[in-house]
Image (tube, rainbow, N blue to C red; front, side, top):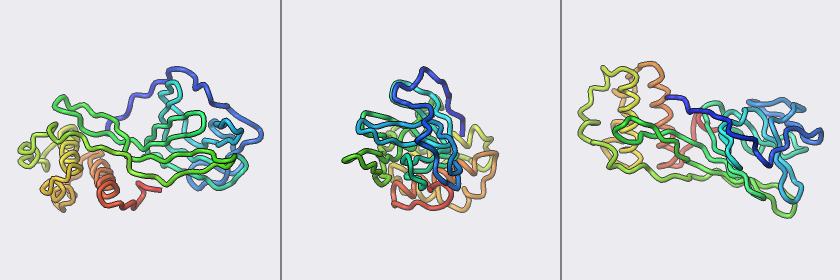
Length: 226
């Protein structure tokens, strides 16, 4: 999949770069106990959380994007939220809530452009000076099926496409499947399509399947979800 454009626009107004009283806990993926956090965030009741791991990018106001990170309550060793390197997230901070949304890129029309959209959300908030985190829930509306010419998808010779062509093909197929088009779902999980290998297309296909299984069937399996 193509990379996002990453631009730091200006400093995040509510971030504390580092506090001696708030260190990272122990996490198998992103930190060792006692590490300095990437940054911390303090709620209005003085409760605080530490973001450990990834570097925030595309900072705009109270919103930024980040990947490969964990969140700890300051003073605690166990993370309350973790995301791997393949999970690109949008974080939105308000005075008493932090919204973390997983982002995927979907096909966005005949110009072969890709649009980042959120597929899930969890919220970190405080209640009576206690930090709580909600379960991750689907936060998603499928792209308009009218963006895709169905006939071109099902007649495509995807076995002989180059990477750019198959990426475009998979993007269209994903939109049809997420709109519960039965033929598209059948093709998405077909053995014939699974045997297609070209560059990063296999990884792209695996991600689309994982997203579909979670959104449509509530299944979170494999290295895409932890």
